Image 1: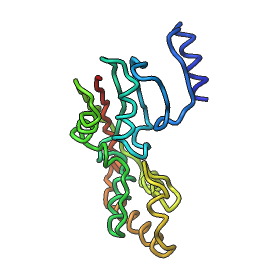
Image 2: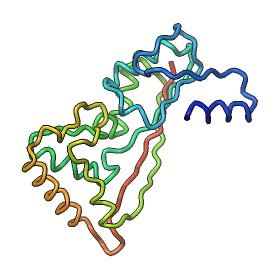
Image 3: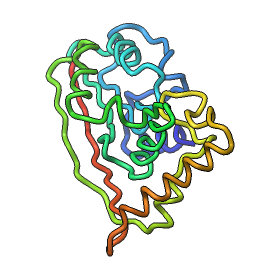
Image 4: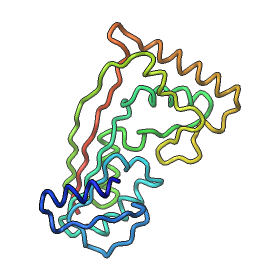
Length: 194
């Protein structure tokens, strides 16, 4: 469906130099130096190996070509932040935005993959949400985690999972204010040039 929408937009904009392919972004095979731009929106953190993906994509860009992706700050999405905190008590690493959660981490990823002229724009965003909405962000044992399979909490016993959920809800309740619970959505727009 996303490809159909993209094709329609390309037709409306009279773009005749685009091609749309359904491929695995980590294993796509294209000739070297063929792309002017590579953009990855809302999917980069889901790659199994971020450095390998960037290095792989670097090959496809023409000299001077631009890569762009967006990532969320490690403070973004209160449910994920609190889930990470609770999971650590059980010896579980929940990556979420950890690999790209700071400007420095994003910059380092691009530099290690060979990109130059790196630019990172920060967009501060967020809103207050209800306690119920915040509690609904509990990851549980079947919720996928970026770059992690199986879901990290699936290793917990039924009893441990129930305890972890209770701890999550207590942590969320402690964040409540008169306006609600602040749900940060700080976003980094990351660009680099080959």
